[in-house]
Length: 130
Image 1 (tube, one colour):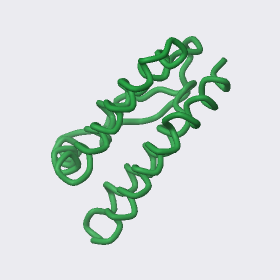
Image 2: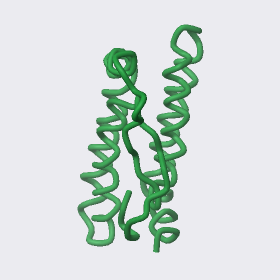
Image 3: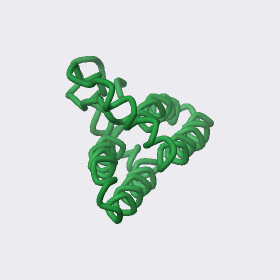
């Protein structure tokens, strides 16, 4: 079921969200000081392309640096990536088959706003965990 949901996800929302994260990562690579945020953007790009079967957890070693970095991330790229997730989540929830994908999209909003201090791990739950 995860594979089917991921394939449908890529077709309707995942590719465009992935492209947004890749563009943000490339733009953030231009000034050398923002490369850590670019790495976070590329990491989340992979998750936003294939979210079912994985989940985001807090990294236990994250501290004040991650919190400050997340504030800078929201200013640089996070707000418009979060808006992309919100708009595509609303669009996906219009149809019955899109509701699980819309829920997955809404679960990506917090990580799109605060990617530093997070880790993407395989989920042990059911097929609809994103």
